[in-house]
Image (tube, rainbow, N blue to C red):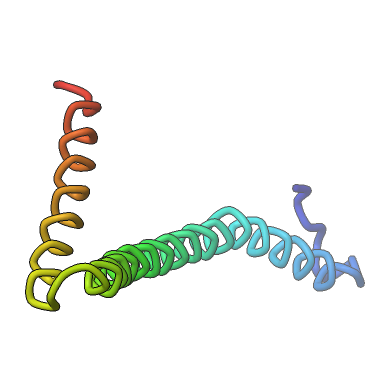
Length: 107
């Protein structure tokens, strides 16, 4: 950045100072506001993705339970098919949880 000349003798003094200030403000904005906007967008999209994934998992468990109930209803009475589907889906989720628990990193 160069020092501006004497404003009384330099006719381009105001233009040069304005350009230098504009460059400085633009540089500061690029280093702060642009990165802040990118960070906030990443946080918002991550939260939205987690919310959608959580909703999808819940819906898949509900669909699996109802589907298993309908499938078991072919061979068993409805009340028996219901508790068998709860037992089956619960068992699958329990074993999945135990598997994930065994894979965790110990501190």
